Length: 194
Image 1 (tube, helix red, strand yellow):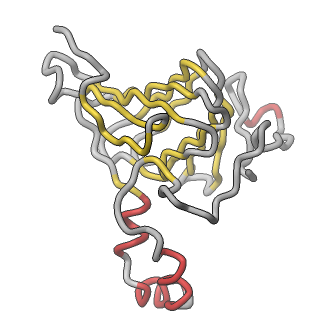
Image 2 (tube, rainbow, N blue to C red):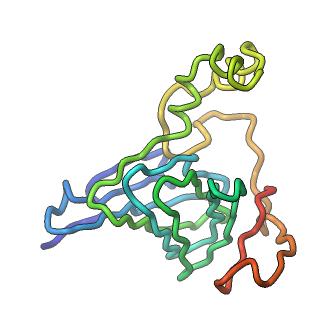
């Protein structure tokens, strides 16, 4: 009935950016599981989705932007989260988390003891350029060049040594007005434009 969420390393990018986990395989008595993540400004938990689990992001320290693609409205919804705030990411919805400060500590809690995950990096690097051309009229050479830096699955991006990265805005994306009846909760999404 005891577990330590700092024993099993899921990913370690460097000394300040890492993710631990505590799931059913580490503590068989739980019906849920979570990642315990530390991140610095500009680090992103890459775009991904979970085929079998919803996710609750809980910020302990720092500030992040969580973004999720709503497949029904075809819109990206982004939320700025500070300590104590949460965001729910529905099962099967494509999402990512961007650190805006150097002191981010968060938990991502799942409603399954072991969540399945599909990483955007895997999807992008294994789809043949010819398929992207046939499906979307994307220039095959341009696509191959664009995804060439993606050599392996990584959870925390950008890859070490990336020289083509833009730092996030200190304040995050600027909110755009929405009709007040559009949202039922107190926090409206921030359209993603960072």
